[in-house]
Image (cartoon, rainbow, N blue to C red; front, top):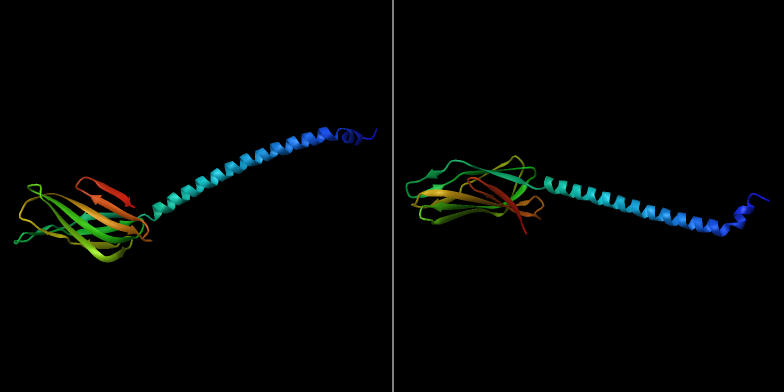
Length: 167
């Protein structure tokens, strides 16, 4: 008997074994593709989060000299700097709490959006007129990322800082 005769005699069995092996290898390939897709998706999400973080401006506000005039005007000097990424400054609102629970609002804005580079200082001087004693104040800062697509609002009070995206 020729050695290939066994193959010829059992070709149906060999075709069945071959079909099962092809199906098993196909399933293994599908699983490996799923693992690869998931790994790529996670890498993409990490890169997206890193890019979003790198393009998010992180402003800081420093209160400078507060001055009072004899005719009742009070002015603040705020210095705004940004780190991490440049920003487009939109406006600043100073909300002052006075004696007797009377809030006063002073808004300082720009015509359009002013770019502020990393490390650059923007100095703003909001003013209010009041005869009451100032108890507390809150600073609201509105700005965009440098692309102008994401708008943010940052709130400073004496004890807290809160930044949130605005839809």
